[in-house]
Length: 357
Image 1 (tube, helix red, strand yellow):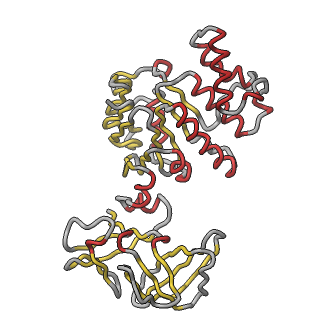
Image 2 (cartoon, rainbow, N blue to C red):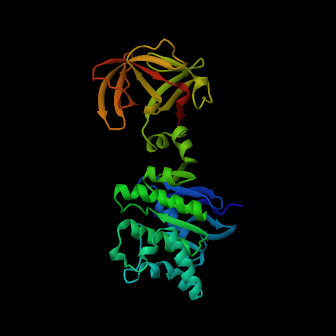
Image 3 (cartoon, rainbow, N blue to C red):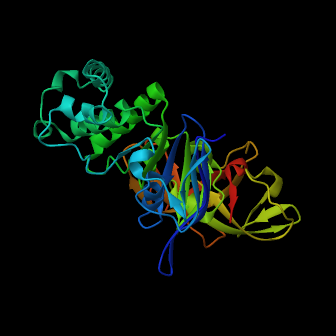
């Protein structure tokens, strides 16, 4: 039985479908991110899980018990969930220890038990030495740790996080996303994490649900979303890619000027002919100064460098095949320097090419 189960969950405002019949199940202890652009419905979905918004259709179940349906909604305070907001929402007039223990006091636990649990969680989040400080005396990262500690200490059935790192600077965001994953690995609380930042989702999640226009386009492990996207939107939203049109015919995928065997694609086609759209990641192609003697099964074709940008860790090249009008973006190591206008050879591994819809 899933720990958290969303079935045909929908929310409309007038004629606008904000969440459109989504289905998603989480196992006990699983960390799943809802990832997508602004307005895709991810925060509305999270707030329906929390009980702050009533669905127009479908159900939300925890441990097999229906918590939300169009005719019946369990209030947030009876769901045994904790939610962390963008603004942290910690009390300015309470110390770190008082903030963390507030939920335990509401549950009327014995004072000795509250002290024990607060002390333990502050050690886990590395905030014991700041227990007596007030929020105004803390950095943004420290305030976020307090919010995490307060949410976890009550041992919720489900933990919900709504873009919790959006107010932090880049370096702190990187540090905190690994901290969130570390805490998850220690406590194994079933977690739903909302973000528009793919790096956060990739670093923290067991699985990612990519949302677009109120629908879930694909749910998969982070590496599968990147290497095996199923739709044009997912391919373009997760990382960078080249979307290239091609034609299937007689077992080959034909481009302008060259073709590769369809059977060697990462996702072999389900038909024998017709137009297809392919996703080719920039790092799955290689630029060579000379034509290789052994192609090692790669498609090799002459190209011209039309643009380049040095990004420190890599070169971002744009090349145009000699017999095609399409331009391709290719990533290369810093030492692989090719001037604009140079004629080079492009090697493409068919096993890294994915058909998308």
